[in-house]
Image 1 (spheres, one colour):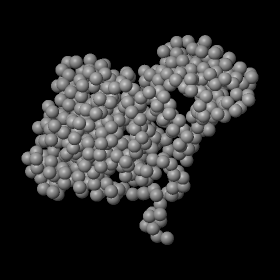
Image 2 (cartoon, rainbow, N blue to C red):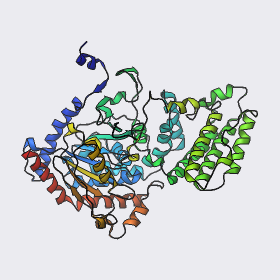
Image 3 (tube, rainbow, N blue to C red):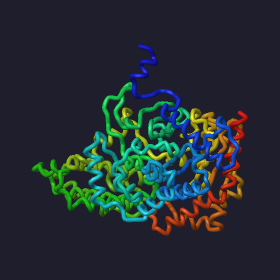
Amino acid sequence: MSASKLQEKREVRIGHSLNKKEEEFVIKRRETVFQSLQKLNIPCSQDAVPHIALLGSGGGQRAMVGLLGSLVQLDKAGLLDCILYLSGVSGSTWCMASLYQEPDWSTKLETVKDRIVERIKGPQVSLTDAMAKLKKYYYGKDFFSLTDLWAAVVVTAYVKEIDEHTLTDQWDHKNPFPIYTVIDKQCKQSIKEKDPWFEISPHEAGYSLTGAFVETCNFGSQFDNGSKKKHQPEMDMLYLQALCGSALADGKEIKKFLLEKIKEFFKHLLPTIQTEMFEEMRKDPKAPPVEKCFQVLMDLMDMNLSVLNVKDPSALDQSIRTTLNKLGGGKHQLIFPIEKLNLADKQAAKRYMKQHTEDVCNNLSHWFRFWPFNKTALSNLNKSETRDYEDAGLLLNSPFFSVLRKERNTDLIISLDFSKSDPFTTVKQTAEMCKKLKIPFPEVNIPSEDLEKPKDFYVFKGQNAPTVIHIPLFNVVNCGDDIKTWRKKYHTFQDSYSAEKITDLMEVAGKNISNNREKLKEQIAAAVGKKAHN
């Protein structure tokens, strides 16, 4: 059999070319961009239409709201229809997921914006609904993981909905082409040898630089030697948002927040313990009271919180050990004694609690057969047969590499940076990585005086490289001397924003576009001119 015919039979596509459906979209979208350029009085031939990508960085709900405010102003400035690609990391993907629920959102953005704001300033998803969703994930999947828990417990707290649509459901040709990004956890430590950059579009999911893709509806299914062996339903948008936006779990304050959320979730579970999820436990004559098992988990979370707060957790540890001994008739022995915990050494304490948490959960796994912390689930995380994906912000907090694929021929990148602190880290890191990987990217030089007081508009250009516009969210133009105040007001770790905070943040983000409309037009015109002469 010829290599080409073998490739046709496989469902993993190996190759750097764009998906045929994306190629077809680009042709149609270029006509929309061309018409937009005519309205902006930017001279352009059909052949010189630039490929413009808009990037939204990570930043939790700050990025979600900031991207929405930026897009609204791009629309008002008549620039939104110039965008070919819209790519996001983490919190920016939460905004994208909300937008693409509307088939033609870019044609009625003001109305869509009002609906999104009304929802995210409203009440949270009820714990009853969140629990029902978690059960649905558990019973409907072969692989149930912490991402499912993250989706039901944490992401719903910010996006205020359970979106069960799929990415393929949401695609409409009237909008910019959406690209959601994550990274391959196993590859992120050696980016020079391996490709960690993973993109998910309405048509394909795969490695941006390596060139290995599956249809998006098959992402999550089991493959062997390029052929699908077992199908899994396409992930819904809630799960995709959890997959893209899991970096919030990284860091001390956010870990505290997550533990508190899970504690609240467990408390809600207690009145519903007689559901079908506990059938096996209730049928087992040796099964202990379910409440006792939950109490161990509650104590375990309180113990983790105590260590994060550098407080002695000895009493909680003793409670856990005593309860486990009673549950197991004295047979359950924990491996890691409390004497090995050194609160003065943060890294050592972190390692101890990781080992201790796994140890406790393994002891409970006989009773909690449905729970993802059992030995089988933990061992699955280390098997090479599976790939683990996580928030791209844990490696690079902006999706540059999704639009740096050579085949996308990107001429101009507009980078919206919603990072919590240094707004130049993403663009500087990208320049360094591209240099190592020999990917064309302009040099990035930031004036020393701008590091503490960033401006609202930067342009980086290079030979045979796309032009990069970089726009920090908080800057001296829209915040004056109060940049630190604004950063503190919108720090990553906090409950969902009030209506007032949403309005204020959208206004600040929007100013970065409205104040620079003419500069944006100049760079678009320059991209047209550069392409015309190439």
